[in-house]
Image (tube, rainbow, N blue to C red; front, side, top):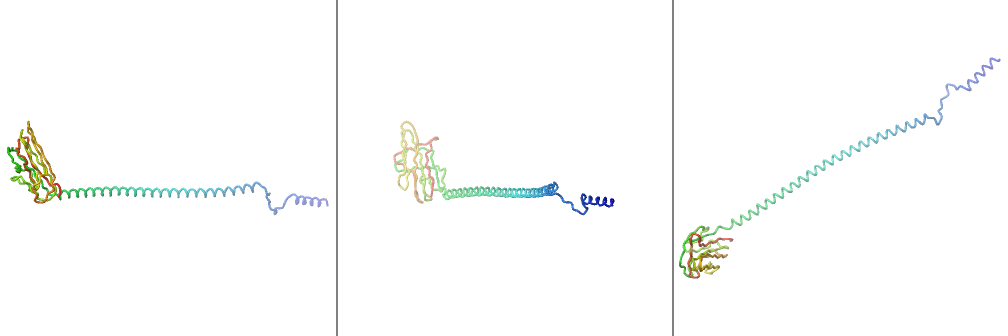
Length: 245
């Protein structure tokens, strides 16, 4: 009986103080393991988020670099295009300027070529002691006669073309001798000059602009008893030229 009671007490103590193998382990609500687990999960989520941000940042930087590179190429093309356009503008300007110059030269050349060459120059190297009033002064040595208007025998110029002419006469006199002449157009005196010196010889000139019709005549007429003087230093002359038609 005593032995039975001892066994019974042992079993009771075993049941009370030792849990059976089938009883589950129950972790306390505030254990350190649960806190560490939550911290680890949070860190994993943060690491994933940061990796995502890094990837997005990398994509953003790549996109920005691509945009900048594309814009750089666009700006380069635009600059080259503008440079080409400006160069073309300068080329066009130079071309237009040269064309205008050529047109102006052509116009000027055309204006000059439209005027036929009509001009003469006649002179004398010999003195003549007596010229009477109204006598035509003849200059027999012809150095130029474009258009054939001057007659060295009569001393008269006949206009081959109508237009504006310029005429000039140059005369010289001996000491104490008069020489007085006029340029005459269609029997009208249009210019006159006088030469006289008491103590020496000298020269004088006259010039006239005359509108002439074809066939009009111009000559040098003596208007006062005169003596024409010439030597190796003095060559009396008569000349004329067509200025415009």
